Length: 447
Image (cartoon, rainbow, N blue to C red; front, side, top):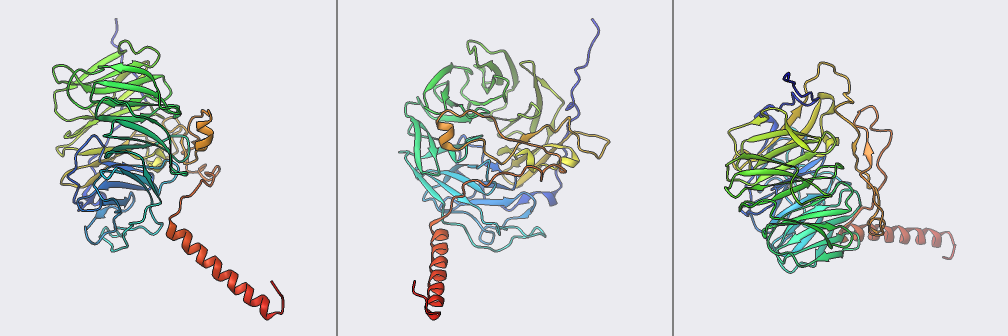
């Protein structure tokens, strides 16, 4: 039988090490450890936890690389304990949630004039953000993980060391549903593409697949990995397949693909290596590309998912600088006209944050519609109440072609405001009312 090379549009995807002037440095990172990614990003900002009291968070603009200086650059702080995890609202690039050791979850909105690093890459003095929009109180112990709903507006999933997961309506500041019988420490929480279900992996070697609206267990994956390392998981888009990563009985790192309709045995198993760090899978659902990195690794391995299998595209990105955390920015924040199909933000211990741009080489300067299908927009598919009532929709899509971006703009969504903002608006309105009453009285008109 003749040897055949598998064809792929992404076969030659590559990433160069970014130059120092395109990186973010100067951070004094938090020493708190856990199962979190340590870095999260929207299409406009990225966030990392910093060292210090009050659970400080560093927020930087993606297009403003340079040096961040503690004590000079603006930070976000307001918790009474260390921040363990955070997540950005997929429908508002300026809103994010923080989970803390103080058992609370806080919602924040980054001001429009936020600028900790100026245009020249130098630290810029500014006002710290200390007043949150909303405080969510309900967990009895420290909150370790948070994840926003992918299609419903203002819905948040959280996990804590009180062995519970909760689904929140942040607009009403209340718990929608809760499951309080997890067996042990939670390793990971993840929504499926439509947000109808979510998965929770735990230290008791169980992955529970749960109904998102009722927080009840619909199926269980028992001992998908026999080793002691952390287990991570994710839904592979709309394919009906499920990915888990962990360690084998001999402590080799491995990943498995499962059919959600039949979890009795994996469709495929692949051994990665014998490194000690936890694997960090990141999936591009538009291109069906998996980027596999790991804590303490300098390698990012790209795989293409097709026909229930993962095919390694090439040797990927290699660096001598180990990774502490990793995240992917939303595709609408990529440099589309330079064929940037994915941008991973790599957090390191001593060299700051490095933006890793994965590019597909093309000779043409035109928009490449074959590698850039419509992607998730910043418009929610439904409200929290509609979703809870049974509405099931996928993400609202948008064209990535720069010529079409203005054709269908996102609808104006609910905007949370702080007490100080509402008080200032009320005071301004009262002054206006007093002024108009005086004008009417001067004109001899009774009001």
